Picture 1 (cartoon, rainbow, N blue to C red):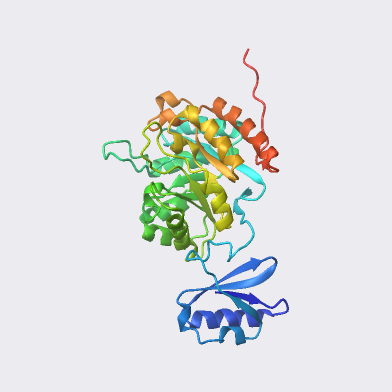
Picture 2 (cartoon, rainbow, N blue to C red):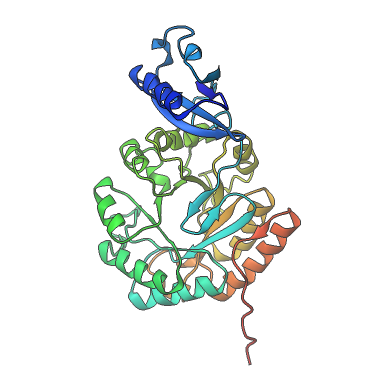
Length: 349
């Protein structure tokens, strides 16, 4: 239920309302609904005596939240949520691009990747230090050493870093190296223990859609994070498995406007994993922005031909630079703006 607080309620009344909610075994989470304070009471509401909440001093009225994904729904938060990653807003009117290689490989590779991503107009640097791979014999990532390379490469440019967490036992390691955004990959979308653990942090989380997950399953996974108190959630559409073998995954562009209606959470798109080929990334990226996505997560490598993983779907920094200009044009056409200042590259002599 959503408890709307009277505009003239004082702090003592608000505290008493939250205390009563928690005494009933429910979780009390504050929100602003069109500039009015509200408290979401999450849990088994059948134990609350009829009319008890409504009778508390400071309560204006009580509204039911009908969706199963209570905190992720627009019923809980009608306005678009903006997730702040340091000084960078994800959601709202500015399109952000997260770019970097699939895997962190060497210090030199990451320094070049960070410089290339920043010059191309990316706002955040991505890179995998822990890699979930289908084959146990494939490269699994540099692990802690990779986190260090990633942090060291991003620091000179002031770029926040995004990397995937696979095991809750590594959370302290991620915090040690100052990971700004924790990514939950497609294979872990329904790893509920992991979702609960990151829900207890206030670190922003990118939650990728599962390989064959429905939108409802995806939003219920987001609810696991939100129910622990972390509402800094960014949904990432990365394509779903289909019967078509011509490309890696089927990008569900229809999911973007649907999610925009159902949830207040920002929505970004990963065109690299959807198409699985670098030549498809520009078209999928522009389609995503035209459909209303708040940003893109794009694989970019200084030398894709020498990448240790997924080189076939990575753009060069020059290709990313050209794409960000197209993205900025589509953003402007839809009444939005590109997030970072775009730098003109020198002409080749």
